[in-house]
Image 1 (cartoon, rainbow, N blue to C red):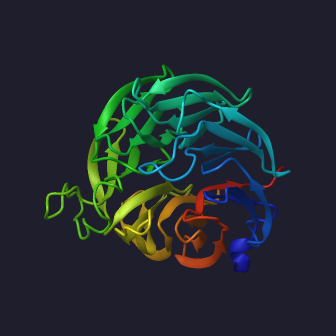
Image 2: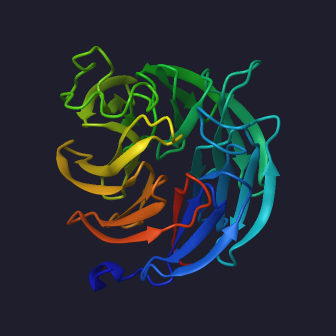
Amino acid sequence: MPQSARAGREGDVLAVVSQSGPTVSFYDAASDRHLDTLEVPCSPHELCFDPTQRLLWCTTAYASGYYHANSGRRTELTVIDPDTRRVVEIIDLAPEHGPHGLALDTVRKRLYVSVEGSEDRPGGVVVIDTRTRRPLGRIDTDAPGPHWFVIDPEGRTGYAANKEAPFVSVVDLERDVLTAKVEVPGSEGIAVSSDGTLVYVAAPYGGSFDAGAGAGAGAGAGADAAGRPATGVRVIDARTRSVVATLPTQDIVLPVHMTSTGKLLVAEMRSAFDPASALGRHAPGRLTVFSGQTHEQLGQLDVGLCPLTITSSPDGRIGYVAGVASSTVDIVDLDSLHRLGRLDIAMRGEAGAHGLAYIPRAA
């Protein structure tokens, strides 16, 4: 990594999930040097770092497999000390199952965890007290598969992306109730602008049709030439709770991420159906960067296979993109849009690098 990009990162750490590891690996953020690998319960998915408690949270969604093809849903959250790199506690959320998305409110000391529905109740969000590490309650989202969950900067409103359900669930975090549904054609990743006025949603759901089917859809388009939902990122006005624009992409978008400097990072999956592989046949994924202010496309860069998660450094200069099929993490200079490096994450099956968390050094 160039010296300019190294500046100020000494002691910072990047944590990376390997879904089939099943592990969380730790890397020096200044040198990309591997520091340690910690085994965790099977099929870990997402990570969230809590700077107030200085703990790392990891979800375990399935016994094996994916949302649409798994051997059973798990119920655990693993709590990790990122400094000693040891498991502090494993929390069982049963009867809740399929925990996936994580969102943190450091002011109210709450962690929000999306969980999947069952025959007798819809999916929802479990609320956890980060001091006691115990559940406080549940918010129904009225959809079977809420996956990613985000909150606005004030911690008053939450948004759940729902895979098959044709809407984004909007919840009041002060009353812990569902308050609105914003129509989108199934959704994947989700992010909120730094001022909380806009919500960015990757839609349609990646299982809606083969990747690439909507290529070439125009800005604001609702469907492609065949009548299928246009690929891209729906922009929701948080005040009116309506879609006001679509940022176009050539292929299906899975994760989205908003940096501290106001850049929207969007990862496109490029693949085709392959009956011999649960993950399909992949071409390199694509990182597309938009301005959060003007929505102008700032540039693109090829990344690993099937990018599932994006994060960035606190200063917004470095982006990290995890490719689950190649089990790689691409490290990107977000000013020049050049790749600074690539981490190869060990895996034991088809699914590798997934959840990411940037951990600043301890004070």
